[in-house]
Amino acid sequence: MPQRDDPAISPLERNLVERVNVADILTRSADLYPEKVAIIEGERLLTYAEFDRQVNRLGHALLGCGLVSQDVVAVMARNATELLLTYFACARGGLICAPVNLGLRASEIAYCLRDAGARVMIAEGALSDLAAATRAEELPSLHQVFWFGTMPDGGLPEGDGRFEDLLARGKDEALEVLVHEREAVQLLYTSGTTALPKGVLTSHLAVTMAGLSNAIGHRCTPEVATLVALPLFHCAMLNSITIPVMIVGGTVVLTQGFEPHQAARLLEEHSIQLMVLLPMMYGLMLTDPELKERRFPAMRRAMYAMAPLPEEGLRQIHAMFPNADVVLGSGQTEFTPATCMQRPEHQWSKAATWGTATAMTRVAIMDEHGRLLSRGETGEIVYRGPQVMNGYLNLPDESAAAFRHGWFHSGDVAYMDEDGAIWFKDRYKDVIKTGGENVASIEVERCLLEHPAVAEAAVIGAPHAHWGEAITAVVILRPGHRVEEHMLVAHCRERLAGFKVPKAVVFVRDFPRTGTGKIQKNVIRSQLKALYQ
Image 1: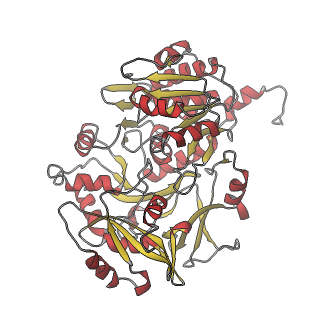
Image 2: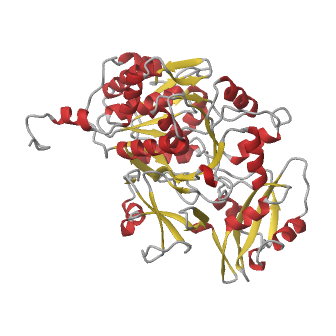
Image 3: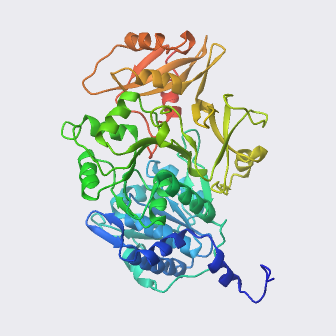
């Protein structure tokens, strides 16, 4: 029987036959559906055959720049075809794609590029100011920048090139190089809500297995079309939506940012069946006078993420998308999402949960000593599965801590019920320790969201000489609604134990957020730290 080290089989030939490579997803779909539209971006359409051909060209061109296996290519772009072309070209050439988180400040982006050692960057002309501010920082490894789209007055920065010229250097022939399945294909940086961003290295195997798992969970077929309105530099859109749809040969409709009327037009024009929005985005559609009575019967799966939805909000979304399952999906960059997803049969009965484990994920609850807990017991959510990250870039101690006891540690506090549904309590760092009691901030937030005047709520523990931390609610009101602080406190007192009731309510117009819409509670804590002093 031939062995894996059989000298009669070259390493490249064996690799091409048996490997797991993210770019092969695209090739398989191009084989099956060459004339099917893969990407729609405005008036621009790209079939699977053309997309696959351009990925080959770009892959050859990037390697022609002197890049070698596992070199990093950064992409500073909004949701654009060029971002996806670069991502798949890197995969095909054994390079690592690092989409830039546009929610970060220029100094933070520069830190990420230095940490990654990015040698080449593909950049969108519309982001030239951000790119210039980033490049004003020290970036010793970055040697070449290639631009796409319209540049502002003044043209290209000296020494830079055009993306289309780079693409023209490549060849149409298949790019076949040795790429191992656990080599990294993407480098995404966490949002830096508590410290400097951490680089998460994720492999071809992890991305592919997560894509297959999500395709199963979303019940994707070749007829599926998805609207990608959230940013592609985040794992939610890249890994849990775009790649699963491309695995089955579906269509990805890109839009740069979210505008309710544009979204409604695209939903109807392309018969969108799958979508993920943040609750506040659904809220914009549901409160728009021209849209709130509209119905979108083609939608089959209207997902939401980042934050829970009160029952009334769920009812309104169900009315707008009458044939859709309205379900929550959860996960994190380090364990290529989604890790948990609500089952359709739980979308009402367990709407407050994160759902159950996805197909390729094992979920458990663990105490601080590494002991797995029984159903109903509260502890940290831990995961096992092939879609876990390789590790944090340049942070071996943090990587080791995340993998302790042979499980990946999420940092989330929860318990699991008899159906395996995960009842999230809080992030460990967001548990408020007040007067000797531990309070889950999310419990108080859910209570506040039940008030008809409250659109969004963030609850933090502000330093307090007596309580240790005083529960403090920061609230955004719905348009046209007014409510006094004492009314919201009374609302909570009727529904919560006394020690969980906010000591203060602060009204704001918006929250500090990451580029993916997460509320930056660390910034809020910093802003309010003097409240009780």
